[in-house]
Length: 278
Length: 220
Image 1 (cartoon, each protein chain N blue to C red):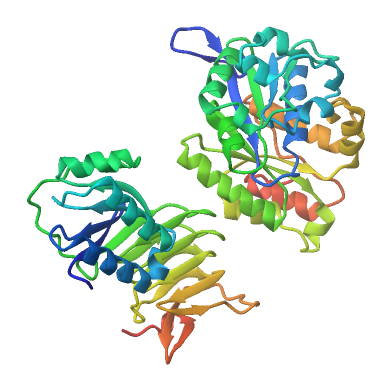
Image 2 (image 1 turned 120 degrees about the horizontal axis):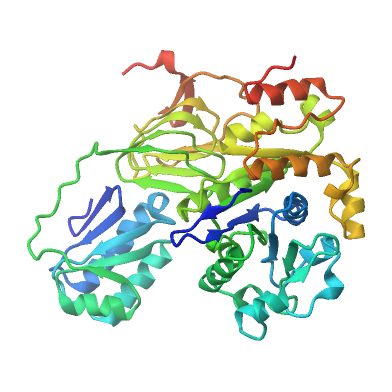
C-alpha cells in the first residue's frame, strides 16, 4: 500500500507531513504543491493544506485561487464543513487543497485546532501535506502540531541553512523528528567553483537524512506563474526531482538525481549514498 | 560568593537558592549585586528559585521577578516548603514545587562537570555553573556558557563562553575549533578570517589575551 498505516482501531490512516524551513522564500510552497501533485499522480489521495494564514500562496501556485469559497479558518470556526472547504484540483480528482484565510492572521487558529483538523483529514486522505509559514512563531508551531513527519526545505545558502538548523532543534524539542531534508535550487556550476555550499557541506552541518535535491530550474518559475505544478512538465528537471522525492516518500528506493553537465557534483552526490558510478 | 545566595547547576538547569532568614530588602539588594557581577553568565538564563521556608507575599515575589528580569533572568518555577509562598507564586503564574523543610544547603563543588551528548543547534544554549563536556557539534548560532572549562568532542562553530563566572584560568578545547566567537572570563576573541587548521586545539588566557594553540602543545 502506498504509504498507508494502520491506526490502533484498524482504520487506514494517512500520513501528515509538514513542509517547513525557517527562512522564507526557499521554496516551501513550490515543494508542497509539486510533492502533492506527484503523489496524486501516483494514485494516492492527497490533501495539501495552506497553513500560512494571512499570506496565502498555495492556491495561487496550484492555479485554484478563483475556486475558493471557504478556507481553513472557516472550517476551524465551524462556518463550513471540511468537505465544503476542500477544493478539487483541476486535473487530478484525488488531489485537494485546503486554502488558508487571507483576511485573518496566525492567531486565528491554535495548535489543538490544527491537530483536530489533521485528524479529520488523515481519515480521508493517504497524505496530508501542510505548507508551513516561514518563521518560528505561532504559525510554524501550528503547522507542525499535527505532523507525523517534517520535511525541511533549505537552499544551499549560509543563512537558509542556519535557519534550517534552528528549525531542526525546535522540531527535536517538540518531538516531531527526525526531520528529513530537501536541498532546493542547487546551482551545480557555482558549487563546482566552490562559490556555493555543496550538498555535503549542508549535510555535515545539519546531520539529518537527505530526502532529495532539486536543481535551480527556470521551468519552476514558468510553471508557478501558470498555476501548474512543474511535475506535469516532462522537460522540467526540477519536476523530475520532485517526482523522485515523492517516490522516496512513498517508500521506494530511488537514487539521488544526477544534475547534468556536472560530473564532479554527480560523483560526490553518488558517493554520499555509497554508490559508485559504473 | 554571597552566603545568602547560592547557585547550583544541574542537568535540569540552574537553581538559585535564596537564604530564608535574611531581611527581604537585604536579600534583594544582594541578589541585584550578585546577578550584576555575573551578568555574562546569567543574561538570558532561566532559573528555578528556591525560597526555603520563607513566607513571601505575591507583591514581594513580583518585586523579585522584576529585579531578576532586569538582569535578563527568567524564573521558571518557585520551590518552597511554605504553602503561602507557593500560593503567591501560583498567583503570579509560576509553577511551584514543595521542598523539604530541612534540607542542608548543598555545597557547590568547584569542579562539578556536566556531560552532554548531542548536537547543539542554532538558538540552543547549554549553561552550567561548572565544567561542560559536549560530545557532538556546536553549530553556528548555538551557545555554551560555563562557569568552568568547556570541552567539545566535535566541531565547535558556535559561541563558547568559559569561565563565565569570572575564572580566567578556564580553557576551551575542541576537535575542530572554528567558533564564531570565544569568550573566557571577561575577554572576547574572534577567530582570524582564514583559519584552515583541522586539528584539535585549545584556547586559554595568556597575558590578558585569548590564545589558541594546537592540542599537542598543551601542558598542565
